[in-house]
Length: 220
Image (cartoon, rainbow, N blue to C red; front, side, top):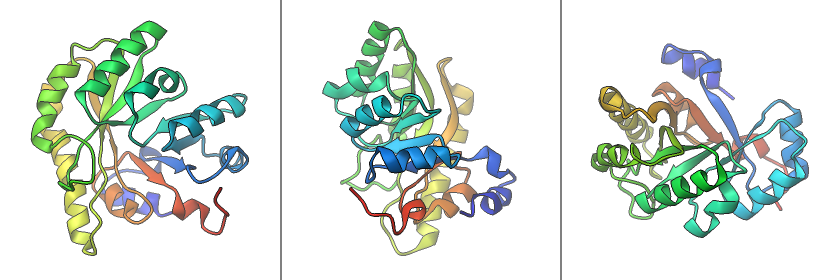
C-alpha cells in the first residue's frame, strides 16, 4: 500500500490515515487473520455478516465499520456492533439511529454520505444539502457526526476522480466554522483500491480497501 507517500504529498503521515479492511467477501477466518496481522478496522457491507462476525470475533481487538447502505429495519441490531457507520445517507435513517441509540444508551458515530459525483445509482446527499443536514442532526441525541464519506464515480480519467475527492475536502473546509456541537467533520472516508492514492492526496483520513488486500484469496 502507498498510503504513506501519498499522505506526505498532502503534508501528513501514514498515521493520519486509517485503513479499513473491507472483508465483505470473506468469512470470519480470513477476517480474524487480518486482525491478527495488525489491522483492527474491519469494513462490512451486509449487516447480517457484520452481526455474525461481531459475535464470532468478540474476543479480538476489532472495530467494525458498516460501510454499505443500512436499512432502517436493521438499525437496532447493527449499531451496537459497530464503531462507525459510513453511510448516513438520509434524514429518516439518521433519526432512526438517534432514537435507537437513545434506547440502547449508546452514542453512534456516523459519517454523512455525500454523492459528489451526482451518479443517480449512488445514494447520499447532494453537496448543497449537507449544511441543512448538519443543522437537522444537531438536535438529534446520541449520534456523533464524525465527518463525511463519498465514492468517486466510475471513470477512466484520474483527474476527474481526484477532482471529486477535492470537492468533498473543500466542502468540509467550507463547513468547519459552522458545525454544530455534535458535528466534528474530522474524517473524510474516501478512496478504495482503485483510487485510494488520489483520495489520500486530497485529504482522506479513512480509506476502504478490499481487492488490494485480498488478491488471490478465494471469496465465500
